[in-house]
Length: 289
Ligand SMILES: NC(=O)c1ccc[n+]([C@@H]2O[C@H](COP(=O)([O-])OP(=O)(O)OC[C@H]3O[C@@H](n4cnc5c(N)ncnc54)[C@H](O)[C@@H]3O)[C@@H](O)[C@H]2O)c1
Picture (tube, rainbow, N blue to C red):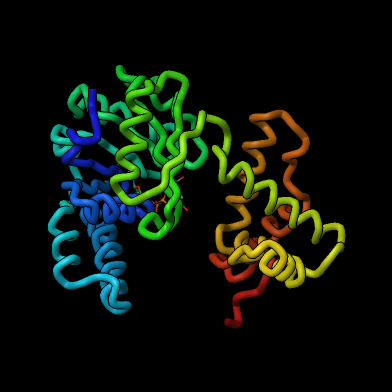
């Protein structure tokens, strides 16, 4: 059984936005980290992300040169699975695609020592389904970080159907050792945060669709009336309207409940290519800024 005190080496698959951020958090907490992606270019991109984040910390006086060197020396980039043989805990942060995640979990199961816990950072996919391709479903768990992992305090620790109490306990303890505030969640679409957030953002689109208020005023109402740092449309444009729509559809289909139906206006904007900041236009126009 893997206890948190036994964990020294963490292997992370996927060196994208989330994987690189999680690698930094683990390295800062003193763990030995392997960060894996598919080729050298992707691995280096992830390592550069970490370096840039630390440099910004130095500029703001929050990180010292020694701290930066220490964190970077704890992380080794790799394109192979061989190092997973040394891992006490692995975290998967590859693309949000079940077939690819299942392939990664099969590899984890093959390469990792039998006590190693296998965690996924998925936002929406089933932990139980990923666990089903391994010979250790009791040691498969969700470890859902928020973006950017270096700054966001919350981690949702997700219990799949077969996840053992020990696995959940060790994962909660590991998140705490990263300086995070974990909560335990039973596997369910959207866990806690996205289950609340996505219907809230969708409802903002219904307000706009019904002409109840202007988008700027809906954003203003939420910021000043609820003390949120961003309005719903600012946040939806930041996240991407296509992603919001896809999660609404997941809820609608998984629960078979019309209360989750995506707002038709959302679909109309997506058809126009107004996906948010990434396309220069969402609810707001960013093309001139
Ligand atoms: N971006 C967010 O806000 C956010 C928040 C919480 C959770 N997540 C989840 O985290 C995961 C990663 O998201 P992201 O935004 O970092 O994506 P990303 O596209 O930035 O990074 C994914 C990386 O995984 C790599 N990859 C693909 N297959 C791989 C494999 N077999 N082995 C190793 N690497 C592989 C890709 O090359 C890419 O570099 C997804 O499951 C996503 O749902 C994302």
